[in-house]
Length: 115
Length: 111
Image (cartoon, rainbow over all chains, first blue to last red; front, top):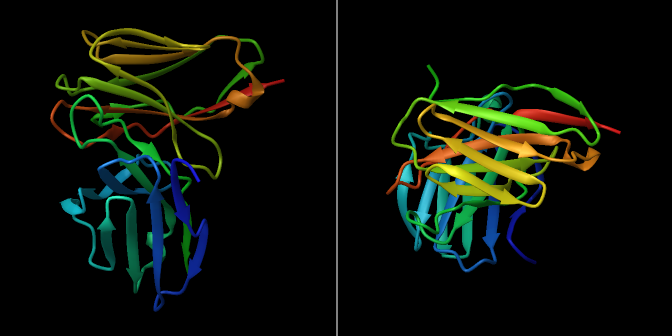
């Protein structure tokens, strides 16, 4: 595997379920991101980790819980979601947070549907 | 006023045409400018990454930044049906990891 991978690619869950999204980057990067992409809206930054330390929690509801056990893996734990949380969830990584090597590379996304 | 404005399209062109995709922005502190291509049901793919003003060319793609007008463009020469996708612009200030994205322009290249 190369680049940034995400599993599962599709997920349907009820509002009372608990599920987790997984992201893995094979680029040797130090920073990882979770974004939410909804139709006709710009990408929304949710969480940012740098060297496994969370540096951003962009006013995201507590029903979304991130976890970064090491610099290659990122999880998004989901519980008691709402239908409006249905969206494409994208993981990204970058070599550094800022500076000349901060371009972000995205994974294919997880299409989440909350019923 | 949105920080980054991008015409949603769709923009339909015949194969072989030169395509111009544009974004305007309001924050004069932006110094990094990116273009991503996103195929249906896929994640965004980084096409171009530029710093400050000027042009950058990569194959059939040219990115242009005009900071005086707060306007960036992506030109695609000899467009192909495989270029049909949504194109997202993104920008950031120096010293920050926050990218501000446009809503994307949907491009259709007709064979």
